[in-house]
Image (cartoon, rainbow, N blue to C red; front, top):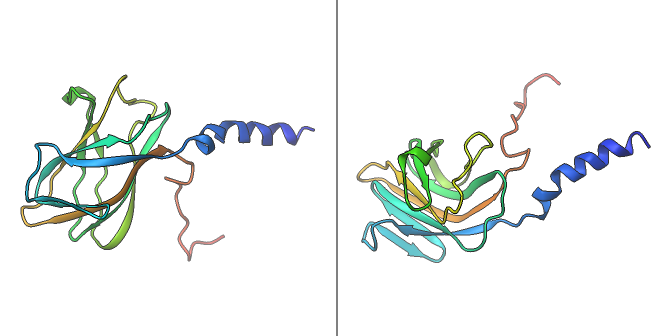
Length: 163
């Protein structure tokens, strides 16, 4: 019986993560249509520096969320600012880590609202300020918000590390 209690406690702790469905995100250019922002077959192509907005396709449950997407970008994208809501205020911004150089579709997962920096109440969308080079192209697909899982940021042991 004493072994059952810790197992049940662990299952109870992760139950909200297991029950929460990811919420798809719709990507739009922040300032309206332009030739530098193209969408085809579920892929968004961004040419040059640009602010874009993500709008959730449904209700986002409470909790710690990650921005989860696939991207393709030769040269990568430096760390960038994300501002929730409107209104978009510097006081509520957060910095997300860089997207590394990628010549194939690559996963990107970033903490969006850690416990010490929650999203403001009533937020409706996210503005991403992407500092791309003038001739740089970023492609994004399968963007969603989902609950953070323990595996998202666990350190991976190198293959030649001693056991």
